[in-house]
Image (cartoon, rainbow, N blue to C red; front, side, top):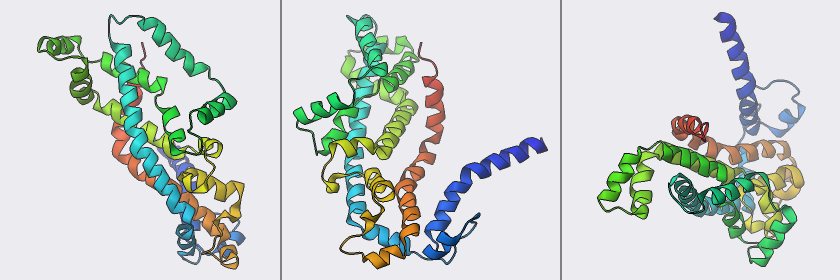
Length: 281
């Protein structure tokens, strides 16, 4: 038992230390971090300069604004379409049900590719528009299968009783089913939210104006594509250079912390949803 505990502590340290290092580095002096070659267990020369310069950049605030808009519209949109699709696949006696499900599953393995998707977005007038980041990601077949498995776990007698009382499919779908599969819907909401939050590639393809970039695309541009993007009219270049290394760590914290704060509240639903998704029969 002691050896197992030791191994577990080592694994916990290996997993959590990179996050702890980034947090400590984001509060440290730039010169001290640049010279540091070993482990870091506390900030070196505590300062908030990196965070101050990060939030002075206008694209950080616009990036947060854009991702909030995407989440506010995209999550209900994702949940509604996933619920519709999962309910359809769980219904009995539907015409052409097997054919339609086969077509849906086909899309899990084959797609049109990047160039056809780009041309399709332009022809629909979605290019350089936040709708280009919302509409195409409306429903995931995998998530719909998980919802179908959850609905299949509801006793059929409950649906029959609702039909006897005069309830139609719309009433059952919106008033009965969500209350009975709430843990599954919470997991789908978490998955879709994390997917939207971490998505940066579609924005680099379909968005041209920097003011429309979501937060992760902004962070990528600053960290990878062009680290001088943080410089602006409100930030002097020399001032930026004195915080260049620390700003990168501060940006990582700013982009990661919000989604990490949400996860603990949905963790219990996450475990149950994964168990439901393990059975797709």
